[in-house]
Length: 284
Image 1 (spheres, helix red, strand yellow):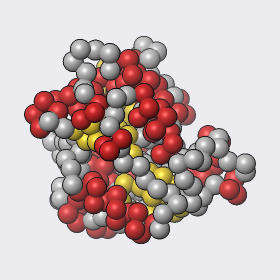
Image 2 (tube, rainbow, N blue to C red):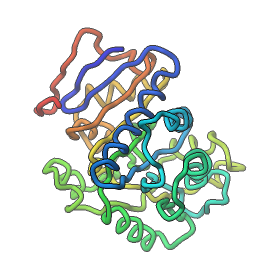
Image 3 (cartoon, helix red, strand yellow):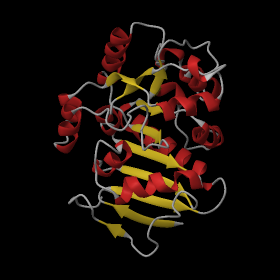
């Protein structure tokens, strides 16, 4: 295992197979258990996708530990949803969260909040934003997209107000928490390849997503990234400028975020540095 920092972002490289998912699951569970102990409840935002399957499987194993969180006291949210599809659709992210997470834990149905891709987009963004505002987000787990996107925050989709709010660390006050975005063609192609659609034309061109201020408004952010095909993205988000053109780089602005990598995803990073400052920020 190798630990280092890029600005405020803690980075951990793990070498053993399966270690990445176990580390992420333990971190999520511990954060939620701590919140329940202090406040009596907790809130978490979960991601979807192939990388997250192993993490959610590991969460099931962690749930058997005596110190595990009581899932009946956890509010469950998810990062995003494709517009125009409902929870019954095989590619629905709400369906993914229900099958891979909710149905496998003793979660209270009244504490699970799904995005509705078939609802009026503006109204759904408002509804979900209000749900998020009503609670303290204890942990948000995210993946890193092949074009550096986080959730469906595509390069260039982050508004000036969102970015200014992040730099001033009051982003949840300056910008909306949930928004409608247009998907890049590479993102749509990835969704098609993931399954659930007959052809590329049937993949929605828009989605609902938590904004970067919403994601970075969580008390703890855990990002998971694996595989050699993500190595150049990881290099860009860590060694390049902090910029809305690489949304994942904005994780370096958070004071309590951790990026978990396997050796393949970390293969293009410097091997001899433990603390690298690139944004003029103090390491956390």
